[in-house]
Image (cartoon, rainbow, N blue to C red; front, top):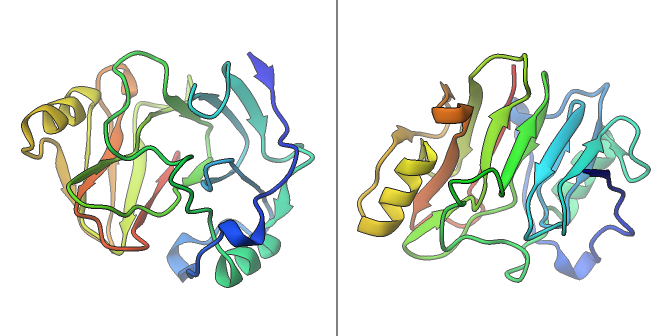
Length: 203
């Protein structure tokens, strides 16, 4: 496992319009790291095992990363030219594997904001989330601009295989706590509206 720093942020041409709403704002005292697929993390040390983004598992400390930006800088970036919408980086057609590969470990007080969802049919996060060891079994989920499902790795795989939604329905404006076998949970939505996305918190 290595500590990673990214060589550069995305070009302006890779961004699409959007807006941060009051309830989802990052803590003003914290720093934010924008990931290569356009998602953003804040709140501590994240462990990311995502072979689609990194050749090996990585550790990112959002407070000390040389690519961390202030919360205000992040808000201005998202309001003006927000998160990356790159089809070559964002996997949406199938769920994450049931193994540890494709897992984001969220630290205590950590927050993950996804890139935007779009497309027809079932669209999947493409990876699983779990709380860091010693921080409990549950993560807090919210969905924005679209109803969605949160479920276990098995729920997501059954949804993918059958076309029928398995899991728990979430609606915009509400937050819910979830866990599953191995404390792994994931997100998926059917025909998501443009600019829909989700937030995962460990608090």
